[in-house]
View 1 (cartoon, one colour):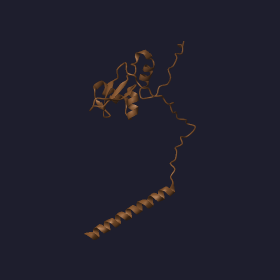
View 2 (cartoon, helix red, strand yellow):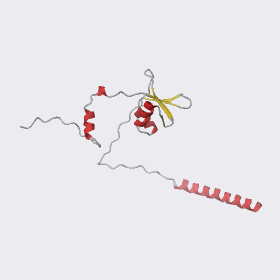
View 3 (cartoon, helix red, strand yellow):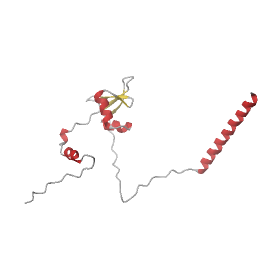
Length: 146
C-alpha cells in the first residue's frame, strides 16, 4: 500500500531549503565555470593583480563576491579598482585552500589572552609624564618671555 521510500537529499539549512534542494540536483556541467579576473588601476589602466575568481578577489578585499561580479559585468569601479575578465591564455595564480574550521560543541572556544608587561607599561607612563612636564616648562618659559 505504501510507496517505496525515496532517497532523501541531505538536510538543507538556510532561508530557502527548497531552492537549496533544487540546486543540489543541478548537474555540475551546467554551472558556469570560474572566471579569472584582473584588477586594473582606473587612472593608469595597468593590471595590478589577478585572481582566479570573483570570490577570491572578494575575500582579499573583504567584500561580497556579488560586488566584484557586478563591477566585472557592468564596468563599475569597486574597491577603487576596475575589474575585467582575464584573457583565456593568461596564467592565473591559485591560492592554497586552508582546511575549513568547524565548531566543536563539546569543547568551548578558548580565546588567547594578550600578555602585558607591567614593567614596560610603567616605563611608558613615566616617559609620557616626563614629556608632559617638559611641555609644561616650555609653555611657562614662553609665557614669561611675553
